[in-house]
Image (tube, rainbow, N blue to C red; front, side):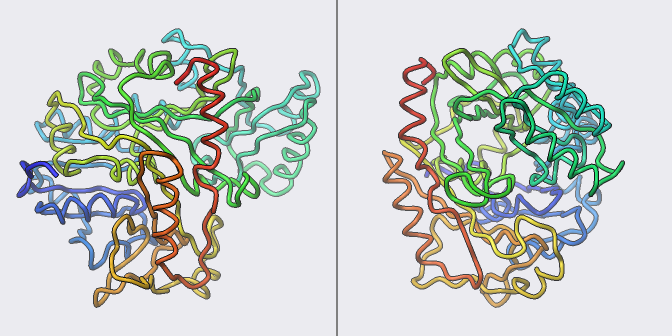
Length: 431
């Protein structure tokens, strides 16, 4: 590790669901002072015993050297704090809209001369069903606004006429009625799903950039419900044709809005082109923790340099990084009774000493024991690194085998797609 230039700095983490515990805890272990605020009431036990918790973050603004918002929706306040001279990592109203308003995101892509897939927004299930009947094709159904947090509602159709999407729309109409809100039908294309991500210092992108492959379904081989994410594989690179065709075109716009933070664009790519799907204009989860496994400098130092608009190069490992969530019931569903019965206060047991590569997620620490808290059942994220994808996988699964958590489950194939995906990407000239 390089010298800890930032040790002794004060970091205030403002978290929506407690997702930034791992990076807050690491920043503390690097010799900084850390305070963590969690907005969601049912997640407020997360982090107890790991870092100092606060109940009113606004009272600690003057105390903090760096303020970090870990989710979208804080863009307005982050901008106001920057204008008041604070060092802030987080969104702006513009970047919040890129993620939260799918139509706005797609319109901005087109404005920056980036090709997008045809999509249409609806508020009525009947209108959407009529649209598919008049325009038969395969579609992806994507909830918008608040409902998009419920990842299991996203549906990727496979029928060429869209009949499977029609069936799902009819089912949602029965179960949700008029409470579903806006949703989008997007034309589906076949290809490799890939995310391009980078840190932005208010003026320009910081290199290298990060190439990520997400594994979203609950079970191996992409079976089961969409969970948001079960694990990810990634690598860092200086150059990427996909980055140049997408995110890089936003450099001037992001600078104009003084965005300081992390931004990611998820794409489907194939032999015909690059098709951006959606933005994540904040840290990705578990992306940031797996990135941390590949960053060989203190994460607090990186955050400080970013927030103070320094120009620098991120010191990263060569090769690959992978990470898998270990989860417990009721994940990925919201069932507070099941959580209390099966998972609340379950202990994370390590067979041998050594927590290297194990990132605390929805945990609290009591008498040095890690206990599961929160309400949705994400226990830990386990990472591995290596010069090949197989090496990184081997390290990660060895670390997982050292952990015992009652009733836990995880995917056994994170990174397996790489051999096939990399061949395709090479042949399309996209690596």
